[in-house]
Image (cartoon, rainbow, N blue to C red; front, top):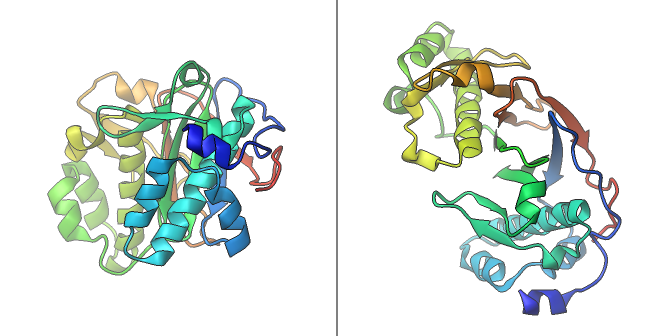
Length: 256
């Protein structure tokens, strides 16, 4: 991390952002296909492990998107913490979910998801959060996958729809389930059929059933899809009531 700090010890996170209020999720919708000079500036904040990970991608486009996502993640979190983005440090949980290291973890929780040229970053004031995003693509989704992983109630909801509507419904279900898993931090150690979500196109989807009898009262799911941008997305938070505060990438931050 010392080497990363020496690469660029200036700007980016110094302006400061107000932490999300209780019961609010800050949502950042980030583009990953950036001009070369912008991406190069973001790259300077990455640490050695992130640079090594970027180098392992076979496709240059995937490496570029990874750098753009991690650089913007550091930039935003540095803005909340009042830190240079290169000084933001992370730890990885037992099931692979990253979080802030040290005392910062008590102040902020976050989750980052990406698909093709988009990333969604959700930030809360110390409350667990999960987010997932999917850009529809050929070969992903369908009843064959649903039958392997989804619950019986979710399958009934999907089968009741006309075939032309099932792909979008599958992705709504998938993103809601993924967001819930990511908020738990349990990864796939929590079976996908151990809980069920609604699949209808509504801003306030529901946790319909869970093996945890108290979960339905405690958890909120939110649909944060953007049809104009071409993706479906969802948030999950262990709070009975929650609101989303949309944030702009340039808001309260110096540009890379």
